[in-house]
Amino acid sequence: MADWYKNLYVGETIKRKKRKVIRLINRGCFVPDLYVVTRASNGKDQLDIQDARRFLLSPEAENSPEILGIASGYQEALGLVCRMAEESRKAGFGGDLLAYLGRE
Image (tube, rainbow, N blue to C red; front, side, top):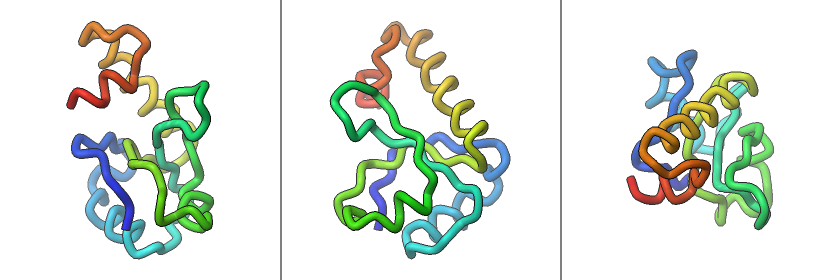
């Protein structure tokens, strides 16, 4: 079962199907063209955008990072990251997305 951010960011395309998509991911099911936004796996970046298939099928799936956002397509996932950055800036966190997301 995936670890979900309490204020999950959801792309417009799947907003009405949010609960179904979460249920499918928790079951390890394939959802076509689904991307997840997580905290970065390396020490340099802040966020990763990953194809959900790669995320679900990895051997480390049990120790997977918290899912911060879900989107239909890579472009929509980029839009979620932009939205996170804009909200972070407006809240006075500048470019520190992880500090902003950690406070919620």
